[in-house]
Length: 380
Ligand SMILES: Cc1ncc(COP(=O)(O)O)c(C=O)c1O
Image (cartoon, rainbow, N blue to C red; front, side):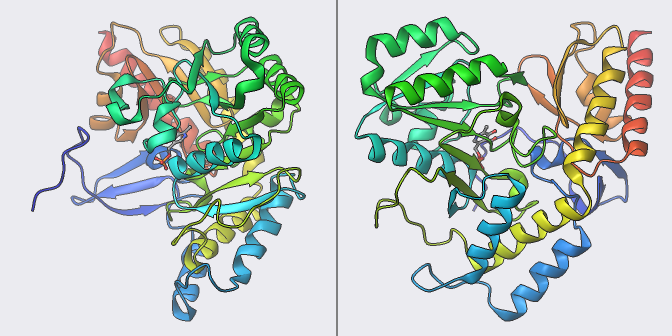
């Protein structure tokens, strides 16, 4: 059997990883500023994470959600404290798309309404509802086409107010990434998130903060939405939550009651997933990784802004994007092949940095040095 060829991929096989470093089959070392697509939060193969998963594996890896799994409550309690949402409720699942799918379903159940507001360049995942609120026609199969989704321009409060005035009583939810990732690192303005909050409250709609990529400490605060001083009704989380172990969830505000059988999952919140997620939170706390993300992220952003050919340096914490000039079309490719540095991208010309929150100052120095070298040699 062949693999279904869904992505163009790099011809590299990674066989070993530690912290912000990975090694290929030939023993070549790489600096990882892509974090396996914003997934590696505490660093590859962190010893505490490895140990917690190993010892959990020796006890029990999985049993269904039909029994008590105390690790789930342990995770919910710890997450509530670190995220600053101790009174929220946690539903666990397996991926970012699934988290958003459940968030949107819950909003519809709760409000009894069907319409969802989403924004231009949004990416919320590949499953049926998540892809319907994703602004890319290439991902939407005919069966996912729906009239229930209204796309509005990102950061345009006037358009949002007009939409609520016209059909506010039909809106179940507004879903928004605090910082758009796949769309190219676009930060939602604080005032825009505040407008979403007040309109949702006024019209009885739910504010869903997709924090799959921009959440879990990446921005320097637990949720990038926290910069606006607002509380969303539902936060979706995934990626960094397990540091590579598939685990995801939604944080649900206390005013939304649970009803039996509306949501459910076989694998979500299994013993191993909880152990991995707990290990991540423990390391984030012990190593003060949110502060590190802010400090190193700010430093990187300042350095990048001083490189004249790079335009529109933007982002928060360790979620950074910049526009690559037309004169350097191969920059990302050359960073990988010549400088041995993984970075992310967003079409057509954005480099995205999504490293581990434990990125060191030495790693950051190396990146800036190599980037400058690459830009100089490419410009010759
Ligand atoms: C903001 C956002 N939401 C949802 C998803 C979907 O997550 P997953 O690929 O785990 O389903 C992604 C993935 O990149 C994302 O960036």
